[in-house]
Length: 277
Ligand SMILES: [Fe+2]
Ligand SMILES: [Fe+2]
Image 1 (tube, rainbow, N blue to C red):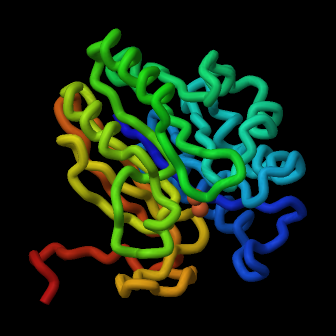
Image 2: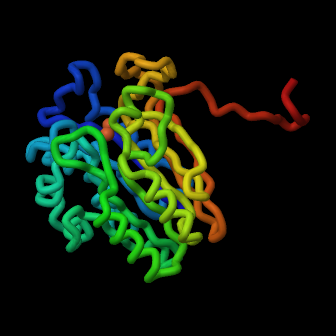
Image 3: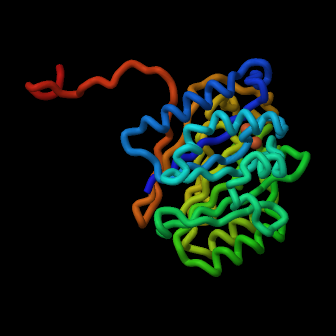
């Protein structure tokens, strides 16, 4: 089964450019068209937060329009939304009333859904703190997660906005996830957690965390500058945008990072006489 991950869309009402520079609406349209033209279509799509830039009703109105090519296929291609620090949970819920999983009984809308006819469980963890850029998994969230994992042994993939690891990009680490040690201990204690996928970092980054690969996905629009100096300035760069495809074969996950853009090719390696010289 193939799970597509789109992240950090940062949509602004009126198609206004993010930071006055980035046409995030056009980038999302391009990313969705690219995803839907994949030779093997995904079985589900997960959007890991910062769906919009300022959390307004109007932002979500445009997001809904832009996601229409995906939402129109929801009977065969379910689409799961997750809030990031730029989102407003209540506005998100109201803009997507048919997404009932956003209305869980927990104070934060964590959710657990099954994919692929029950072969896999997707657990969406809401790591946001209202009004703050940093994230957390508080005691209530970890209790909820432990209950979910203890009550169902189905292999699980956890999606969350704030990654539970430091990156060396100092300004992003300053707005990282609190309480990650407790989360790591919890993940280690449940061997049916097979993968952790995140957003927030606007770059593809991977590490081992709690016994599984944890990673962040590129943004569909702008990327965070790779600068590992202490105190590096917080800057973004228009490196090629992208998304990820997480392939579950029943035993392990494998991730393809997809670069979105116009590139020469494809070219053939071989002609009728063999490898082209
Ligand atoms: Fe973001
Ligand atoms: Fe973020």
